[in-house]
Length: 595
Image 1 (cartoon, one colour):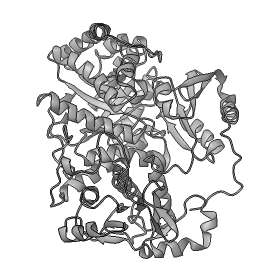
Image 2 (cartoon, rainbow, N blue to C red; image 1 turned 180 degrees about the horizontal axis):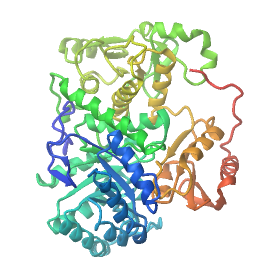
Image 3 (spheres, helix red, strand yellow; image 1 turned 45 degrees about the vertical axis):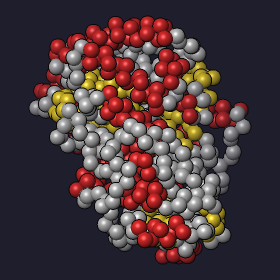
Image 4 (cartoon, rainbow, N blue to C red; image 1 turned 90 degrees about the vertical axis):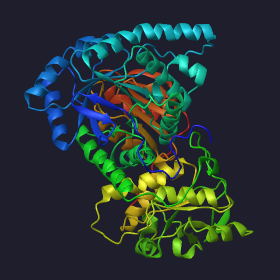
């Protein structure tokens, strides 16, 4: 396979990069993975921004980002910076820029880093269908150069860093029409801006490739790293990781762990932001735990086996489920194109058997001890050869107790065995019997390990062993499948984190929408505080609820706005009406699930 993103599919080592300084904080190089967050306070309220910044710093945030919607608002960054420094902290501050180059030119006077989005820094998205000749495309790039170069030169002069941050939801019409709504389009969008920066001998920048869909995000970052390697050794820029619109609660943490955790396990990522639809301070423990479990993964070492990119059974840049043959286990079909099944242990099945009717969708489907699954060490060539000699497909998994990391172990198994054999994924090879075990690292580890493999197309069934509580382990199994897009069993929400651009209370609104629509299985609803990522990120959503103006909501079907300027107090009811109009509404069941 050409252009691999890492030396080997089994490699856990961190991608080497140059160091980029953001104030006094180094990103990349020999630095630890940095944790950052974004203020939810209005940038015009300096006191609120200063207070929130101090709370983030106290929680362990190393870099603080704040939106700057206009030049006038960006002027207040001077007072925010002065207030933060007056509190005795030198935490770097990043200005987040969308649509307004003049806001960026003001912000660069005050902050240590500026984030620009190539999709809207020099373009206004019109969802226009245009065909560009090579000459017309070159003219567009020349126009972008004229708009972007002044910021590059000013940042270089002042020693200010930059993030060239592509968002899947806001690719320009130019990129969309040449490359489509694809990971390749995301990468090319960023490279256009990076080439302008390099033309001016400016290298103090990092990249990001954010999306709300973990599969898209993972593929885009891998493709970016492969393309940077192709460009040359001096394209070794650090990488910022984040899942846009991850949501809140357990779902937001799971989706973040799949997207960010998987890439960290791939060796990609030098700074991270977990985007939750919650107060920003709650993002920090999640981000720090993701860094911690990544460091533990690398410290414990890899797997003593070799696997080249030419031997892998999947395409790391484009999702396709690993082919297998269908088999029947305990009366349930799995493998082939069947839905991915949820396993549990006999002990856990017995513990919940009396309340299965009350557990709603979180049902155990197969008992692992009765499944006939063959556990093997994927490094055992004799065992692999025996499996490959079988005429009939057999359910297989990696054996418990092995001192090997989960992701490389299952990648090795999937690549070495005949594809006809379905695979049972595990979150850990060391089952937990500790009821006092902290759930957050268990959730993040399970989501990273199983989610990463599912996004590679590997796996026909899942078994969560790291959580002792039966109901909680089943809920975690299903929620990982949902977040990875592998098995949609409930309403799917794309909800952006709060920030200074938000035009309504995202947390309470998202909760209100969940309460009204949480029973609509398979319906995807986007809740967006403003228009920055709205239409693009909603391309995969069925319905959208977007802040259009203070107190006013626009409703979307897909990426098309169909209802405008609805008073916020009426908007949830109007959203329900819209779902009715399109035949997607069903009445909620009388009984609520228990787990």
